[in-house]
Length: 392
Image (cartoon, rainbow, N blue to C red):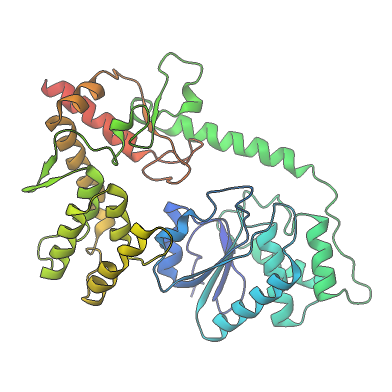
């Protein structure tokens, strides 16, 4: 009987009981798989000082899932005391039979360092053998193409492990002085991006990098109050969007409400969909649909009561939402751009230029910030444009 595969290609099991995973940062296309695997704790070693978006996925975590932040700059080791506390928490979660996902950006250096500390603590290994075990287990990743990055990747990380775990007599620590792999990593990154650009249908999803030297420069958009903001789901057109017998201020309102208004939905779910439909801003609609309480701004905490109320009534996102969301979005875009004259005129005026939702925050609806995302909102806008042109 074959062993279960990890939930995505850039991670590996750290222990034989498969309760610990180490890998790359979760993105839209991998997060759901990690959650479906059963992760109850995410340990994030990325530094917001280097990447302000490193905690963005936290908003998509269920309330029952914890996020432990251990901010560490790339190439460095975590601070000793927080790292020891993290190991204690990881060990306790594992002992309870729950699952942990440890990650940095690529899942090699910082994540590999903490993984070695965890293994050394659990199995009584010194630094040399803990590093070897992390290296061995990383080779089981479905995608080993990026394993030329050492794990851990720097001498600073190796020395940290030597101090924490010790080195037994006769043991030799690996030397990470050779950084020639960096050149190959950069070359591979450029090649992946180039291959991705070339594999996408040119008429629909041509990204900025693949068009920068051509005449068909892409139109980038993101927020509703920026240039070409009319293409954003947060933009409020002059004409409310009428869909399935209801009026919505924005496509975001309608899209989020649709998660709770499937045929046969309970009265409580329909009430929640109505609440989302009538809320004052598209961002509030998004937060309500996440069904996760939070703090901070007064407007945010004010939503908690409704979130808890309907969650306690058993309201959840409709089954099979991921299989219908694209269809829902296409319907909503057609409604928006056929019903509002300004939006329609602007969309048709873009000619054949590619449309790109440019953001690091979303690799499914957007371009991932670097062209690596699927840009599905841009794709569907171009489909809507073609349909409107045909019907005109």
